[in-house]
Image (cartoon, rainbow, N blue to C red; front, top):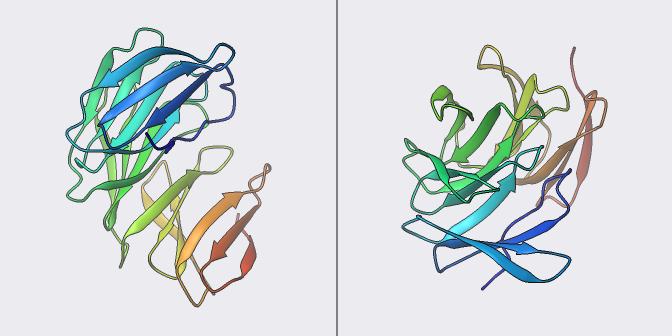
Length: 198
């Protein structure tokens, strides 16, 4: 099985893996023991993320859904549906109350506790590969096949700023710890540092 997951900060005990067999495995890193196998996706699992407190796990799949699991029990809490394309990326807000997912030309914001859709953001001209919250949770960055990074105001769901300057696809980005800067990397072989508007 391919290791396709990523660990979020603040969670150091279990490991995890997801892959083509449509499952997510939870492992005890200290002993190497398999502790749980989470089943429910109808297609391969392509990414996984823990909530900041480690109590919830989000798994996303080419079946166009995101599933929210209770980590201590392995119980499936919610299946998030509505994306019309395979889900590419998912991330929890810093306080763990919201989840952002990207698929095709849309980014969706979900309430973690209820599993309800809060907002759908749909101005991407091309597929959105990745999403990330700012450290204070008030901004959401998204980017993908286009050459720009979109910055969304989370409370209102409005597009706040579009960062233009790359000449090829944006493959990754990260906020600085104070949220004042954003770094973006691209197929154009450059990394750009942006000072964000207040």
